[in-house]
Image 1 (cartoon, one colour):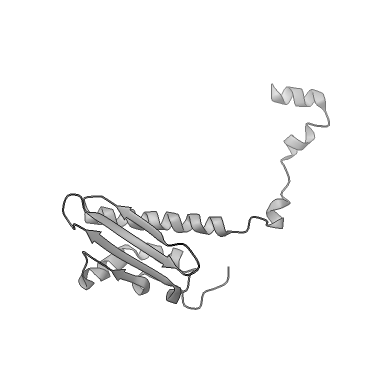
Image 2: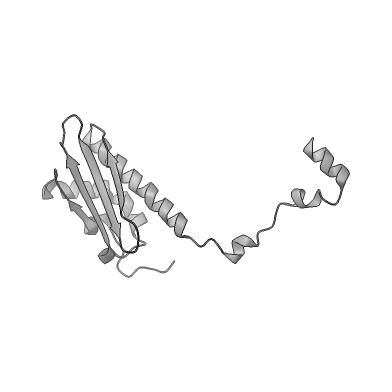
Length: 138
């Protein structure tokens, strides 16, 4: 993977939406700082995060974290946890999982090195000796 000249960070890419104030932004960015390592592979100017909450601190609150990365599908994570801190942790962890899943899906499938990895010796040797094959399957 090539190095990114201007890596994305939560502090740079996070916008707070409905239910949060700009004063909340700093402590949210601190709580989401663990995402920085995962976002570092993307350009800051092509990455956006938006966090919002509906019915803050009320029963039935819903926290939503949206992530836009150029060239990829938008990722939306939500949490209905009643505790705001728990809900923030929930959406953060879910976003990290989804980013990891998206990265795995985009890795090359037809990598010659991976294709050339042979089968374990026990599996390939059983065809030459039928008696041994029979013993191993019992």
